[in-house]
Structures are given as C-alpha cells and as structure tokens.
Length: 118
Length: 422
Image (cartoon, rainbow over all chains, first blue to last red; front, side):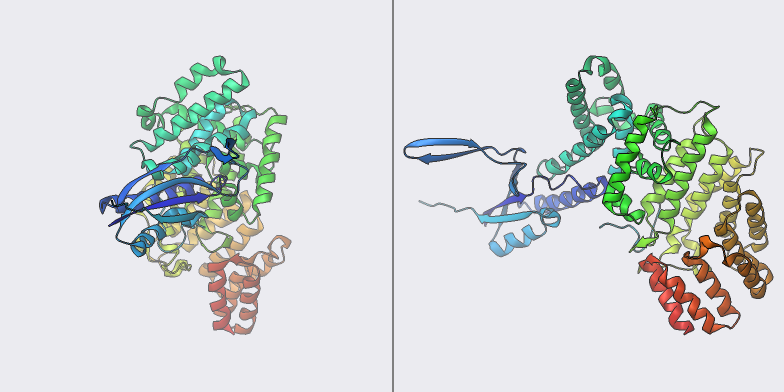
C-alpha cells in the first residue's frame, strides 16, 4: 500500500459562473466520492489552501528574496490537496479519475509519496 | 449542461433543500436589508456564499446544517459590506433579527418574514416600470436563483443578452425608485397581473421548452408553482384569480411524468399513460380550483384551468369532455381574444364536430400574421389534413412545422410525422 498526493490545480476564477443548481450537483458528487473513499479506508487526509497567492521564496547570491505569489491574475493555482491510500499508480489513477475536480476544468497532479526506509 | 427533462419527470414539492431556492430566498432577505439599490452587491454576496461552500465542502465534508453554513457566510459578508458602506450601526439589529444563528436557520426559512421578503422581491422585480422580458429575467435570477446561463437557455437568448437585460432592469428599478413592498390594495391589480403573467410565461417555458434537448424544464414549473402558491396563501395579495392560475399550473404539472418517455421524446396526449399522472398534484389543483370558484368573476385563468382539468381528470383520452372544453374556448375568446387561443380551439372543434369542421375553423384563423411563424399552427393543420386523407398537403404542413421549431424532441417527433405522411 502506498500513499499518494492529489494536487488540485484550478483556475482561481473557475467557479464564479456556476449556478446554485450546478454547485449543488458538484457538492453531491464530492460527497459521494469522499464517502466511497472514506468507507474503503482510503482517504488519508486533505486540505484546502487559502484563496491567495501565498509567498515565493528564492535564494540568490546568498540572499533570500520573498515575493507575493500570484492569485487572481494567475491562470492556474493549487486549490488544495488530498492524500489517499492505494496499492499502485493504476489504483491511484482509478480513484483520481472519479474526482469531481476533473469535471469542472481542473487538473490533478498525482504523485506517490516516497516511503523512505533506513 | 444539466437538464432534468430526460426520462421520467416529476415536479417535487418545495420541501427539499434546493440550493437554487435557498439562493433566491437569501437574495430576497439581503435585498431588504441592504436595499434594492444594491441588488448587484446582493447577487455577488449570495453567489459568493455558495462558491465558498463549493470550495470548502469537498475537503471538510458537507456540514450538518448546510443551509445554516451558507447563511452564516452570507451574513458575515453582508456585515463587511454594511461596514464598508458605513451603514453597519443603522442596519445591525435588522440583520441580526433577519438572519438568525445557524442553529435556527432551518426554522427561519419557513417564517412569514421570509415569505414576505420573497413576495416583496417578486413584486419589485415585476414592477410595471420594467419591460416584460426584463421582469421575467430579473424574477428568475433574483427570486428563483437561476443563473444567467440557465435563463438564457430557457428563453432562446444568449447569456450576454440576458446579462444586459438584467443590467437594464436594475437600472430601471433605481430610476423608477421602485420600493420593496407588498402593494397596497388599491395599487394591487396592475402589479399582481404583471406578476401572474411573469409566472405564466415561466411555467409555459418549463412545460414545453421552445429550444434545446429537454422537452420539459421541471425546475421552471416548480418555481412558478412555488411562487404562485406563496401568493395565493397571502391574506392581502391572494384571491380567486391566483387560485385559478395555481390550479392551471398544478393540473399541467400533474401530467408531466406522462409527457416525456424514457428516451426524452414527447408522448402525445392521446397516448399518455394516465396512471403516471401525479395524484398529489391533482389533489392540490382541485383544492385551488375550489378556492378559485369563490369569486364572482371568471378570468381567463379560470377558463384555462377548467380546460386543463378536463384533460387531467378524464379517465381516458376517449372520455375527454371536448364539448365542455370547446365551451371554455368560446368563452375564452370572448374574454381575451388571441390567435393562439383561437388556434387551440380548432382542435376542440375538430373533436366535437369532425375533421371538416375543424379545417373550416382553422381556415378562419390561419391567416393571422401572429401565427405565420408559429410551428403548432402547421402541426394542427397537418394532423387535420391527414385525418381528411389529404396526405400530400399534410406532409407539406408537417415540414413547415418542423422548420419552425428549435426543440430537439419536437423536431424528432415532427421528422417522424413527415416521413410517415410522405
């Protein structure tokens, strides 16, 4: 069993035009998806990230440069992440395909957590 | 997107938690608190509260009291908005009173105050200062909680057109200094008529969508029914005419489950499975019909409701009382003459007096300019011509009907008739 991270990339302005009825449908789909995963013991966590650009830090010539990350002007930002348990990438992909994020223009970056053994 | 017209169609009561209805209810209350001049900000606040729910609930799970959650978010943003406008102290008590803490949110939505907010909003949106299409768009957006896209699809317009229509409507409200209130008895008739016509248009579009993949948009019918029943139950604005309209809607809505088959195609009245008519809606319709009979005036809504009841209550198509229906059409033409009514009467004439009589009645109406680009005029003609054995002319008429429809299910049906007659 491995742990996988789903990084949810999205358009920061993406949901603004959805109708209440469409929002209800998406919420329903997410509920179903989460319930399935949780029921199988595969949902290991997840967090929404704040709707802002955060901070970008870079080291240059021995100095650290800090700038505000872009948000509303960006085409794509990371909205949040989920952690799931799966046997391998095939299984993790099968789970991720069903994530409603993909139905509304979002992109999922799926990465396996490296289990580091001594 | 998501049409509810495919397959079996049911028209639910207003008991379910629907985001769309909650959005409309929230908009009505916030408009009262923030003021009708700030309708744009109200729209943003409501939309934003639901978008916040959409962004958070996938990670945190749906809260135990979703309505309360959305309410709290909207209230917090309303507080921010009022602070920004420097009106917080003036409005604080009103806001606290109207938007109760989350735990009581469920009860709050059934209070008289909420109903009155929605009625006030409906009367404002249907104010005579606005053009009819603006009234319809604004009511559906603000009271009904429909999105610009959903309204555009329902009324054969582009989203840009509807958005413009809403901008102009809001400006007209400001310029006419329209107040948010339930009209006093002396001002009522004109205002009420406008509201009822808006609801009639909305229901009609939901009942037989003029364009798109779905024949029926049940949510438009549901919204029209919800609002007409709110109005009917109100001590000041309710009355027999409103009951008559409610009865009309409910009789039509009761038949919706039989109107569309599993493939999304329309089922003709003659072939509808009457066991699928919604009995609960029929009961509600009959109750409203009873209340409609209280008054001493017979309005066109009364007559239309009676016609609808003849269809909905007949045990079978063959048992339909066409004589009574024809009588209603005759009275309807006296009361409110219109080409479409005269056209629909032709169908009743044919049933009562035969195909030749029907064709004669049709000839008298057919040259009305208003009907020249009206698809059903040719469909009715085609049906009668086929019955009279004039299949060549019938095929031509079916083809003309086909050319004039933007509805996919109707198009498919007319294709079949063209093929069969040709």
